[in-house]
Image (cartoon, rainbow, N blue to C red; front, side, top):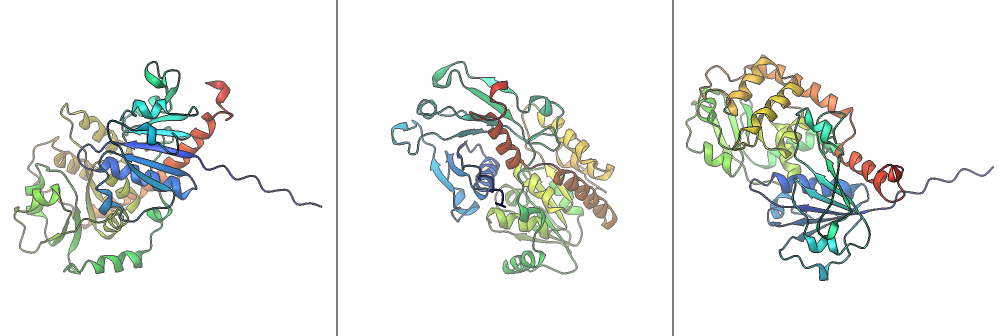
Amino acid sequence: MQAPSSPEPEPALRWDIFCRVIDNLGDIGVCWRLAVNLARQGQRVRLWIDQPAPLAWMAPQDHPGVTVQPWNEPFEATALQPPPGDVWIEAFGCELPAAFVAARQRDPVWLNLEYLSAEDWVERHHRLPSPVLHGPGAGLTKWFFYPGFTAGTGGLLREPEATAPDPQADACWLHGLQLPLRPDARRVLLFCYEPASLAPVMAQARQIDWLVTPGRAEAASRDLPLPPDSRRHRLPAVPQPDFDRLLRSADLNFVRGEDSLVRALWAGRPFVWHIYPQHDDAHHAKLLAFLDWLQAPASLHAFHLHWNGLTPAGADGLWPDGATLAEWQNTVLAARDRLLAQTDLVGQLRAFVGERRPGGPDTEKH
């Protein structure tokens, strides 16, 4: 009796991801991780970036299946080889060059990959179509795709090693930094903007080895006084996998923006999030929605409000003791378990694209 034949493997698609670097490199960090995760699953990815230089330290090694291209203006479509791919992603609302759209040889699945939020409206807008009415793409459809924390959203970027790391390898890597860390001090990673509560928080935190990231966090904290039993250690800029190791190696993580928030969740360590401030204070609602989803206990909720400037900057009594840190960690671990029960962002993207490509199961419905 002849054995049934194995199913044909899904063909590798060509993905074009466009990214504009705004200011704090979280956008390029998310796009690089997305490109790598797609390539790991056999996809071919071309990542267009208007400022690719930061990848020299964020991702110093090339990754098979990922090609980085400078996004220059005017966009030279005449030299575009290969032509525009099967899937187009405009990350965080950037608009694709008209010359790129005009150079297509087939109709793509065109996605607008949006910012991360826990607000209720995200589920309502996720996967909605937006017909293109003007320009060289007239007649095509863009689709809104929202990352998120619930089953009704697009999920989060997630690699196997993010949630099943090697603790011994992490410890060896940290030792290799040759920092004079003390066994009796808590390690606290500082990656933030310029929170008003930074000075009082650092002043009341006792017996801490501060691991201070370069850039804005280092500049904001450089001259702030510390208690005599605390120390400040300036870190070098590290590639993304090593940043993830830092998060797993700390007793408490201060993180900022979108990419490091997701990595802090996977690290499973207590953390405080500095959300990107917006001029109209729209970030306040985003922060509160996230804390509701996180099911943050009162102490963690209060710390976030101080850290993000929603309550007065005085932070007396906010620093967590051991029992409070344990409660925060249990909260993060429970949230991580909820996320692990969901399909990750790349899995959802690939399923969505499969539905909407010509000949896909949903082609006739839209």
